Length: 219
Ligand code: AMP
Image 1 (cartoon, rainbow, N blue to C red):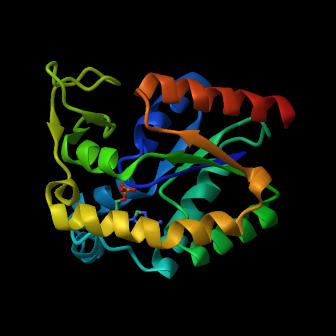
Image 2: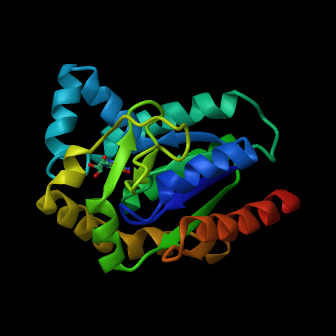
C-alpha cells in the first residue's frame, strides 16, 4: 500500500518518514530529496530544477509526475505483499498530480491512503528556520545543543537553500495553502487520516503508528 505523507513544508513529513522506515520497514520516496540529488549531480536538468526550488516554486506537473511514477513503479516492483508500505513524501502537490496518482494506483491495483499532518503556520516558519539536513542520511532535523542527526548520529549537516531564504519559505507555504483544499477534497474522506502535528515528534510518531497499524490490520 502507498501512504502519501501530506502536509506543508516543515510539517514533519521527512522526520516521520524516517521513523516509519525504521519501525515498519517502509520503502520511501521523497520527491524533494530526489530533486536535491539531481541538483547536486550538476546536470543541466539539475540547474533547471535548482532555479525553481530556490524560489520556493513548484516543478511543472508533467516533469514531476514522470519522475514520481517511474520511481514508484520501481518501489512497487521490489515486492508485492499488500502489507508492504511505500511512503510517498512530497507528492501530490496539485490537483493534476492527485489525478495522476489516483489513475496510477488504480491501474497498478495499489491501495493508497493519505496521512495529512496538520501544523499551525507560526510553528512551521519556526521549524523551517531551524531545520537542517544530515549530510550522511539526508534526514531533516532541528538543531539543538547536541547538533547530531537523531537518525544516524552524524554531526555533519547542511542547511537547504530554500530553508535559508525567507521569501522561499513564504512562497512554499503560500503554494501549500493554495492547493491543499483542492488536493484533499479530490480524495475520498475514508482515505485521509488527519494527524495533529503540533506536538513533540515522538507524540506525532505514536499517532501515525496507530493509523498505520490499523491500516495494516485491514488489508
Ligand atoms: P520538499 O523537500 O518536499 O520540501 O520539496 C522541495 C521542493 O521541491 C519544493 O519546494 C518544490 O520546489 C519541489 N517539489 C517537491 N515536490 C514537488 C511536487 N510534487 N511538485 C512540484 N514540485 C515539487
